[in-house]
Structure formats: structure tokens, C-alpha cells
Amino acid sequence: MDNREIAEELAVACLGHEVVAGMFRPARADKAEAEAAGEKVGEFYNAILKALLKEASASSKGPTVHQM
Image (tube, rainbow, N blue to C red; front, side, top):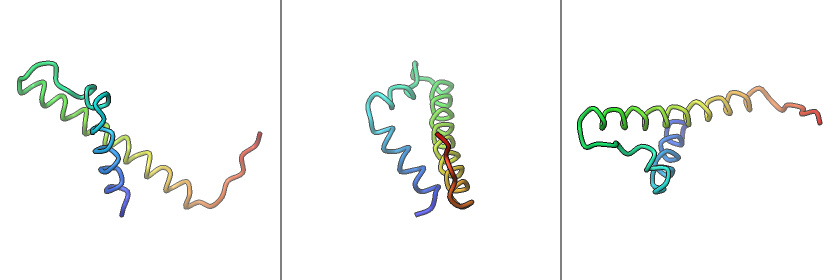
């Protein structure tokens, strides 16, 4: 499973939660609101994908040392 598939599965799982899904529901039942809601869902997916890609990139550089 690649990062895009993982991002999609995570987005679907999150959007399956009533509270999270409520943040993306259009306020009115018109085309403009539906398009705006769709764009928000796309941004949500892209944020998940970006985080996964960043993590994969960081882990491919080898171990890191954290100072406390």
C-alpha cells in the first residue's frame, strides 16, 4: 500500500466519524456550497498525504538523535 492509498484510507476513516464529517458539510444545498465542501475534503486529504510523505522522507534519511 503506498502513501496515497494510506492517505485515502485515513481520510475516509476520519470522514466516517460524525463530528469530523460535520466540519465538511455544506451550510446550504446549492452548487457553490457543495463545491466548497468538496474543496475542503480535498485539502484535508492533501494535508494527510503531505504529512505521510514528510514522515517517509524523514525516516529514509536514517535515525535521528533527539536531545532532552
